[in-house]
Amino acid sequence: MATDPALAAFLALDDDTVAAYADARAEVLGLALPPETRAGVIENLALLRRQAATFTAGLDDTGSTPKAFEP
Image (cartoon, rainbow, N blue to C red; front, side):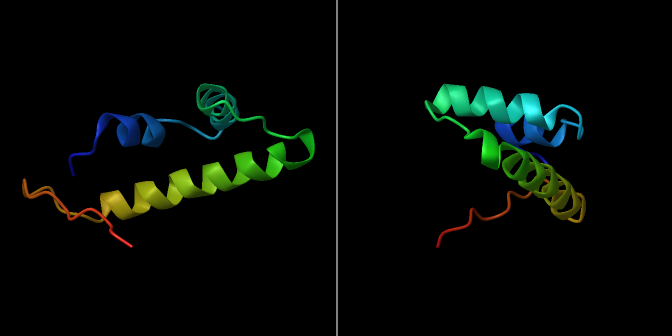
């Protein structure tokens, strides 16, 4: 499945680089990760990355673009 560059970069991370990614994204967004929540945020991002990889791997690469989620 074709992914946008941001998702492709996120999926290319491994569990060891998720912490650096979280810190960099927080800085870009002007957010501070409180020390008492940082470990949980990193754990959740690692889980989200693995789930996203599972879901995108399950889609076939037929050239069609999946619909964007709209709440």
